[in-house]
View 1 (tube, rainbow, N blue to C red):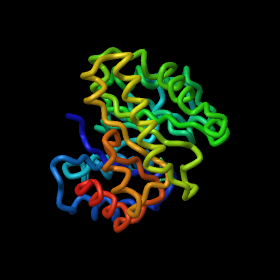
View 2 (view 1 turned 30 degrees about the vertical axis):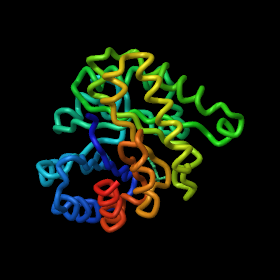
View 3 (view 1 turned 45 degrees about the vertical axis):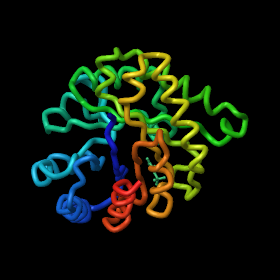
Length: 251
Ligand code: PEP
């Protein structure tokens, strides 16, 4: 059966001292063997966090570049991340798509390279508010998955986690209702079934992201097709993130 996952996306937040303290507190928490806890840290902290807490906590990267090396000023390749023992990476977060103009084609290249190098990828997809208002949300998600993810083989799909993150819910305090989130997760699972197989559909974890917090996490996580959360703002404080981890245990 698929894994339950609670993942924190720290984005470009936290001083080194804050990041170290937070990871230290999270690493000490009692574990539920059925739930994976992941934090996606700024690259600059990855090496130190993995060395200190890698046995207790999964530390992932928020991005990577598809070329192995070369004249790509400011980028960090998946190959370089692997040298730091990073094994989990976000790809296609809406902030990368919208602020840094990452296209479906670039994301496809990133997906291929990261999977080739053995990463578990957390592929983010999500529609903008005007697309939902125009009733285009299902076709937008289908297009994002078709264009950047569905070139992988069934065997490669073992390395994939999907995060559905409606862009209008990210950092806005507006969460998708449990019905809206469950409906989209069920739709994504039906696409996996159509494109791949029943096996891929039932074994791929699909996370919800977008203003998920302690007060709504349990409702979201108890939906049949929601396997956990990708958490932004509420992952920056140990108490908030721990409460979401707890919600997953009882959902
Ligand atoms: C995110 O950035 O992936 C996210 C879900 O952010 P927030 O929880 O703050 O909406």
